Length: 410
Ligand code: SF4
Ligand code: SF4
Image (cartoon, rainbow, N blue to C red; front, side, top):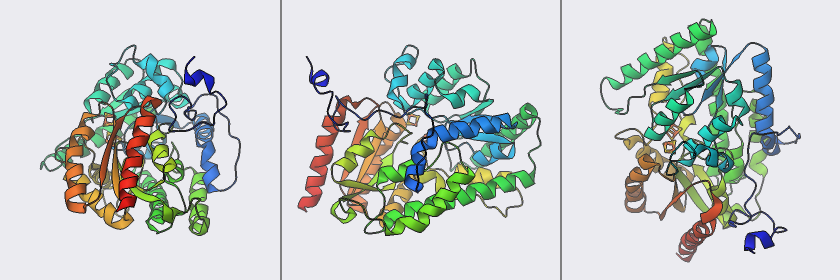
């Protein structure tokens, strides 16, 4: 009998492929309560489901989004509730692989698997999906998803320095605005746009301030705790209150083992959706502390606000989102600048880059990131390419431990 079968009483451990922690999943969970801002977000998924159901009953439209280029402000101004649908569950992948190639990014497969299994309550209650032309895998998956779900695709220009690119993007947002106005029977006024901009700016500022706690020599949070402190749905009043509370009480908190004894890590690369935090856990279970998350589930989408005083709010929204430095852009020099600035601010001991299997854009761009980190920032760099399966956890653990030993030995 295999080790897995003999070891059923062992504690779940992110480094043990036979006994990984149970992946998070949307199905059948109910809020269990919890006090304090950190435990508050433990119930984020069931609470978001309840919130979305309430909003739908009140006549709001549920709009599924799958990328940080999709402006939540525009959806909110259309009386919509934008909900992130990115899949982080390995359990959804086998069903997706009956249609999609196995050698595809797990985030795409998991998102699609939820659709096939009808297992994502947000997707099932969505009145519209807003997709975007980013990587090839997503674009082609969207074609399949749109066969039985209403979808609007934003065409994202991918040469950010091209003189016509921004106007094209603005036009795409205008088309989305018109489509939502006609589908939802609503007017998206400048006043509604401004209200949504202010709400999103406030949330981004609170989340930036929380992330900034990690610049301290003794950060009060682990990277995983910080990653958890956000919702699939933005601007829920009770979440905003918890961010404010967190900013009041967390600065006095100490970690055990102490943060000062851990290796500070800047994590870059692909987003880490809810349920796919395995690599974060491996880093933090082996003496690391992820002080900075540059990716789309971390700082990247919240660093810039929308100009709330702009005379043309739609243009202002388009500008903020157009500046997002994703690897689907060519060239994507802004991401390298961002990593350099964040390194100065968060003072990591090393940079770890996570690449989901078959994510060609981040994988190829990693050559430039490695060069930047090793030759210019002069820090050790480690690239981890993996998927949602825990089968390579032991191998990743060995590589992370070796990196940390080297750093401690210096
Ligand atoms: S990494 Fe790129 S494609 Fe993925 S969510 Fe971020 S902006 Fe969108
Ligand atoms: S991680 Fe890469 S392959 Fe996966 S959806 Fe994002 S950009 Fe596409």
